Length: 514
Image: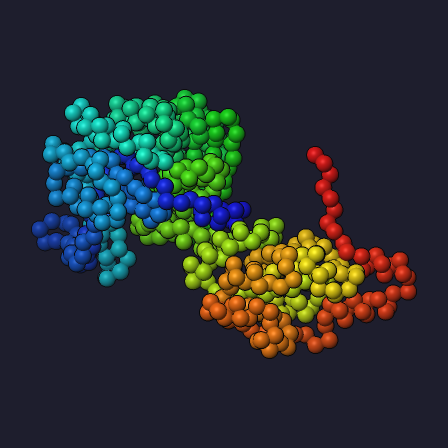
């Protein structure tokens, strides 16, 4: 499934996404906790640095930028220094802030954290001071926000609602946005606020509550996977959702669709350093995928990857597509997924080279696998970060005139055998007699062949060197070759029937109809 998700990520494009919700400014004050104050029994923090980060819906917008989306941010901030700081930080990242309203009647939501280090190390949060106004927007401000947002919906491929109950996501605002989005068939994904009446999200495409939020919404504890499915079904029914993503921390995501289908998408085990921002990352990833028309099962799989990468970081950080690709490329590989058509393989090679990986390619018939093949393929794998084996098709082998009985094994069998080797990342079958066209399209960093070749004897060397690649011959196992092995078998066979069975091309069994 890893390779399938790689292709999915590469098809995401650069969708336009509208974010609606509560913008928050996170301010961190770092310092050394040196002693107890003489004025009162409190820790005295000697400040050395301050840091400002985007929080709430602003953090979702920031994460979407990291995922290469075009982002519009709609919401309300105070007409104050902090509100301007939020707007400027988003604008610098390329976010369209035109539907962001400055409201002089309410302050910008600010969470100020005092982070103390003991003896120059081990920072811990000593105190958090919040400044906020949580009353719902008044009618004039709500109308002003809707007048800006509603005309923009048709120009976006998805809407994300990030509700922190700071007053922006009123029932009136959400009802108008959800109705217009449904009319225009624009998906709306909601990260709900715990403790609110979830009826305000009725008509959304999907919601992404965590275990605790789901429990509060449905009235029972969500402890198991079955509980999550039960909660998802209830939410889909009561809120008229297309699907619900119930995030279950280390257990993954429980997906429930309106048609009753359920599936648990597990996540692989990771080192968890900080869960801050994981929910926003999940929302952003599902939003980008929804905008690109990705099916809900793959949305959950992508969200698992992005959320998993987020919890491996300290603090809130953006996760890029390159990081997601690198994580998938390093994951467990299924043999059947290694054999790819050329067009699909090209996307994988581009992704790896963009990550700075060295791609190695070798080619051949690989008709009867033997120790010579294995030895030189191990050497080839050690030459770079990714090894591609290009295999001559059956027709290509026959055109090489290796003998009337060649190939011994059909191309599907040969490709499957190679894919089962741990050191091989991809196998591709080519129809031509030479790999020249394959080299022109894939542009590997290194072309290798097993044997005592001079560089100029390796077919395609001039193509590889023309774009700056390398060509190299690797060692060979003396006395071992497919031709010699087949000759020995033929000489030792007493039965012509047995011999013909051994050397007749073998094809994989045909599937039964139905």
